[in-house]
Image (tube, rainbow, N blue to C red; front, top):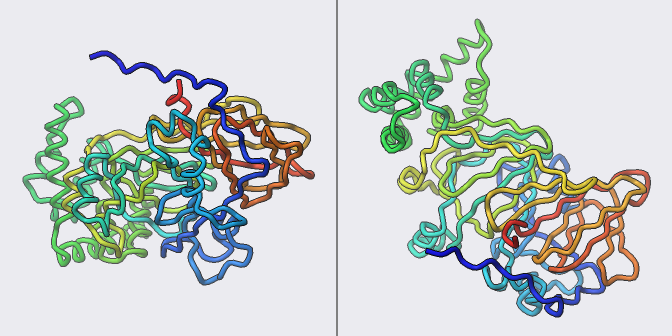
Length: 429
């Protein structure tokens, strides 16, 4: 089968005329219970000048998803409706591949309490779940994603390697009691070089046994484990994973996710580091603040650490059961003051721009749309059709059409820190 022909670069006359003023957005805030509260939340500081100190500010959504759509400052029109009237703003390649909508959803997260153990379905499964339960699975799209740490950021992501899992089964009898002797024995006899399908089958069986154990059995196992760790902490230093278990139990008492956390990789990101998560991979964000970007979807299959609906059977059946520590991205310099994070997904990439006083950063024309977020500082942003730039300050969100050059400079004595979300550059190559 021949490879599909490469996308030809569009003719110059197809280039749209960008707006004469910055297309500023008002963006939706999600007040999920796990969010940081009041002005302690970065989301609140970016979105609200007078946040309610008692209210959680969990996520800022920048995009067109109907669960939290962005609108244009001024006339209040939905960004999605504006794009329908101005399809050139997406560029011909994006329109041809994804229709008249943004293929990515851009977010800021402020996490105070662990999010659910979850996975996002691939496109085929998303279509099935949306058709079966549209009130739970609200769209038919897949949801690969990437998180870039702004503060120290902790997460669970993917299954731990076989030797680490064996160590868990050896040292945590409460888990062996729920998984059962037979499945424990199969995992204990596994070797790194055993066949992938054989390892997957054994791991899937053991994980499903854990996740479907009765509430009473889980409650008893969690209580025993917590009591034992509290006792051990008086005579030895607990491991990071053991300390995590104690922390999760304080947040979600009697929850099977407290035990399931021991099956996953425990990832700690420093500011500027990123991880990406493909379809059907288990993960849970635990604490910290991050930039997040994903395909335009809100499909989440949950199975632990949550009071929300749990679809345990679907989660256990959909996972890949790959055992690998996630790749950590640190961004690649694409010009002075700009680093790019490029995951292996067509829908998105992110540029981090830190522009010092007295410097000018020029973001060249790209064949797709962009959304800019000013994180800190104050700067001047000039589009290629504007005679003069406009001021942009912390919390400002700006949509930029395809084929628009953007010039950014700092105003005042401080650097201006921005993020740009756009379609993955490799999609256009």
